[in-house]
Image (cartoon, rainbow, N blue to C red; front, side, top):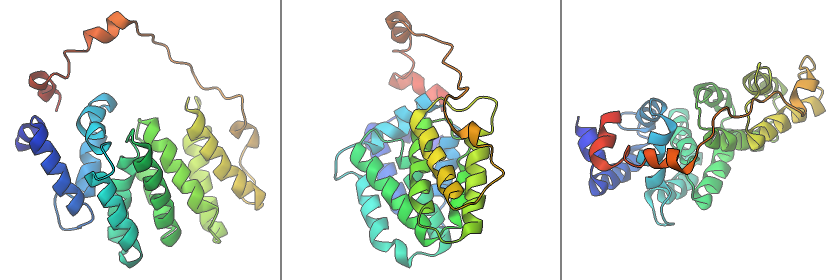
Length: 238
């Protein structure tokens, strides 16, 4: 109930997220990034954009950028639990429409995964059900950047098989060009090292069996949604 009241007020919402970013990697805090992941995973993509993405995409001095800078300064001294929490928060920052935030988050995700490669499998599994391809695209970019620096062939194989199963070994391949491209590059890197020989390579190459969207929208259809997220009503969807 209190969260609905906070998010219904722009000032309080900004103050809340400002504090949440400060506490994101604190394992003992109930509003750390583990809470954030659980909350955001239960929201529809459009509601997440309204409540979260619009607020994290602000100017260079925003709490998003401050968090990125703080983690980059300190990640080498963090333990595994803190690194996992940092990754959670950074991955949700990938929904931002601010390119600077997205780019820096992606690079920092790679750096953390290079430092602690075992977390790669954990986050791939944890975020496998995220339906916002804008987030998953950059997550796979970060994973690719870390994977090519790995020397543990066994771990490379484990990562590659997860990527193959999630993206290509499906009846319908995800209709997102960049997500598919990063996934394909991870697999091709493994194959170049003579790993993952059981993968059906024809499945990772275009053309894919990605279904095209079955719906279309007119301007009139869009106008019908204009009232959905006006302040008094959007609270009904929390």
